[in-house]
Length: 450
Image 1 (tube, rainbow, N blue to C red):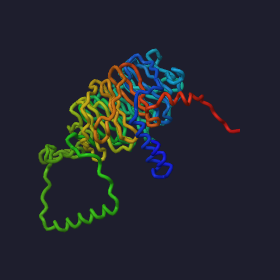
Image 2: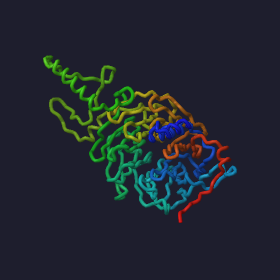
Image 3: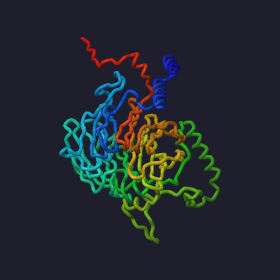
Image 4: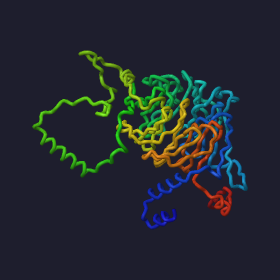
């Protein structure tokens, strides 16, 4: 580290490169924190975790005892162990005793993306509720047709305030906070929707995974999904780099020359290729099926239903889009983790090691800010995989029962995990206790200028 600091001072390393190296080193040294402890008030398994996206200060949790809680992870409630261990108790919690509280397990708890004044909870009691953080009062309630598995809001949205909800029902529902009603429904899945995720490159694109093993992409301004991922369509490795103008011109010239040489050759009709080792079968979305000699025009939603491509041999239990919006990570009940190129819609064939994943409920995946590490709850262990090799680089053991969710805080390079053992653990970069003893714990003071 000191060598990198000297290189930065000498101008040998750019500031962005220096910052990314330091953050990468901190992530590589994650371990169970010996100086931060989250005191969980929950009496059931932790199903959802999220740190707010505006300040990176408040942690929101949802549990199967129908309670949700908020913690200040930057300011400790009290200290133990001669001031070396910071205890973070919840600022407030909302449980069954609340007049408008949920009656059954909370499966999803998320912050309003641009303000910590609101948070949203989804429950097995068929309700999605919007809460005022300051008053801890419910301000909006949406009645769903079945158990709510996952909710999501777009971090990019400036034109809408939609909550995407995945439930036991085959339809994806969009709840509008602005109007307090359902905006519309998205039809295409053949079974319940287990997980939902908004694109990080467009506020109008929603990604869903269902019990039917499909991952569908929706443009919420039009009917029907526009893409269904097919595990048989694949490309090896990451996307080719973008060519510069000179190389692009060379390729275009060579193509024109080859076209001139082959102009005397009689063109052959293109042959159909299928995903059986001899080629690739293209998706039928958007095409008009022919019946006999007459073609029948179908609704786009009906066309998407006819696409039988699957992404997993089982339910899709988890989805996570990279911060740059270029790749999608998916987990399924077939104990497979897959990485997808979102531009082509192809499986990148990254060979993630075989893992044991939960099959009965949705799991929450996490990706480091530089997309170098993937964090996956694997029963009682959280495993970190290299993004491109698929090899396991770290294993976090500390929970006694199955881990359901994890959240990576890019601000502090910390990992938060929630489990069925009712505990929330913090995994922080290595920090020596002796350093704290030498420095001493300084009080939080403000030094104002006169």
